[in-house]
Length: 167
Picture 1 (cartoon, one colour):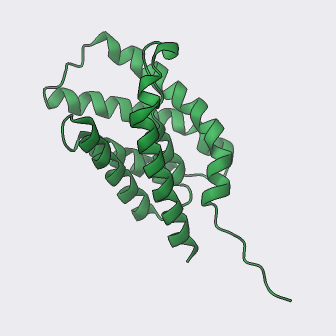
Picture 2 (cartoon, helix red, strand yellow):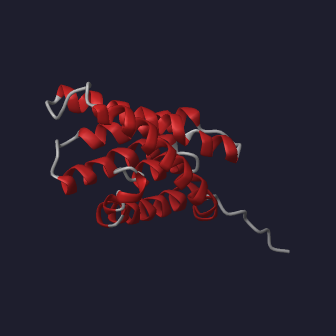
């Protein structure tokens, strides 16, 4: 029962994250060298700590598909990236909170690389763009800071509740 409740709360958080990402966060690029943090990637990575591994994969795929539908880009590109992110997060999940937070950086870097490689194969750009290096440095660092801020909130919302035994 706790797994279902955590998954339900994770779905609601992800829906809110998608809305925030597409309406607010994507417009906050000016102070961050023209880039913005990726809230949906951070939520996918951190949610994998508290939900069942298959549910984490489904959550990542579905969130990516919604972003694809809302963004008007290549259908399936973000779904593939977020499924890859969810898989990496499931494999790297740790009981140590600091390790889970720090793990956001390499998985976010993986997301950026997969996004550029698959985007290039789909004809959306080239791997030789100067933006690749800048983006692969700035976005994972922004995601790491965002993860440090969000982790306590997600721990409260998604962590299974301890059952009280009636006296």
